[in-house]
Image (cartoon, rainbow, N blue to C red; front, side, top):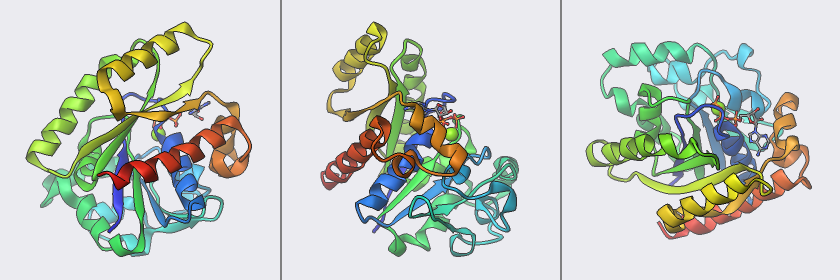
Length: 256
Ligand code: ATP
Ligand code: MG
């Protein structure tokens, strides 16, 4: 059975997509079969995996609305060696259109069930909102990975996210757990980063991943080549950190 994880944080630009794409590539390097699910109308994970979001015949939009299925819509990332359920701006419409449909929070879960046997991992890149799309991600997943920048405001939105996860766990998806908080874009020279990082460890204990992802320009450059940072420049500090994170994930999920 595939392990399904959401990469979620309703704050924008905190490193969700970079984490989803590079974890997918890192796990693929560890010989895991991975499906990266782009659940964001921005389609950044799709593009970052080297798939042109403007040229999709079918996408996750049709899948969520029941007009297609994952087997038809999925593509292969040649640069990342994993599969992608791609998205583009059409997906924004699904938010409204799904409200009318049966099992509206579980449409993604139901769709992914059909390809469960094909994968070891499915990683869902969520949009920056606690929306119907994110709710579908949380209902489909066994766990949530929360990327965070270690800055003052990072902690502010965290309680909303944690409360949403608790509600989904109680009402819609008893399997859902917080797998961990991932410190990203970390700058060890900043005192504030160190302080927030220590605060996170104090509050969340071993829910904080040991691996820390540094700020690294190669990770930011990679998407413009349609490549995960992990394959674009494997020797870079950012790529190395995401490979270490992949290994930490494989270890951590043995315990859940
Ligand atoms: P959104 O909320 O819009 O979906 P996001 O949370 O998915 O954003 P990303 O797109 O992954 O965030 O990252 C935001 C920006 O920061 C991007 O330009 C990305 O290339 C850059 N970035 C992410 N992680 C790093 C890093 N570790 N080092 C340097 N730049 C990074
Ligand atoms: Mg994103």
